[in-house]
Length: 111
Image (cartoon, rainbow, N blue to C red; front, side, top):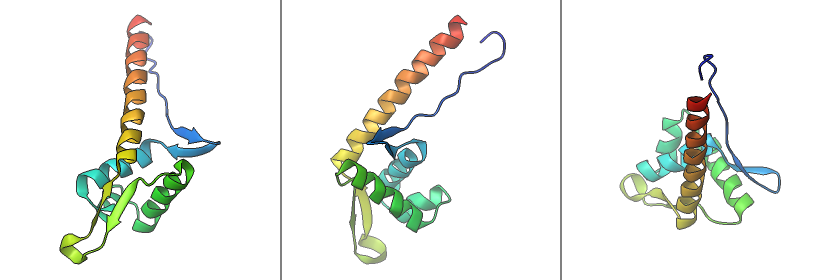
């Protein structure tokens, strides 16, 4: 914008008035996908495992769908991965963000 103002926003998706996903939970899911580990994803976000696990369970309960599959196996075989539902949720969230970013770029360009 010509006057130095910048448009800023936060986006989250809700179901029945409860937040399902926002920027922090999106990053948590992306880092789980990247690292194959809830623990490592939480570490990248400077969050403890318990809080990360709580966020995942809250998202799953609100959606009524499994988002993260975890499997045990010790130091070398255990891990976590996103379900197809989680990948679809991330795609939807990313599409919304990209659309809003484009609208804002156009508004700032025209202002």
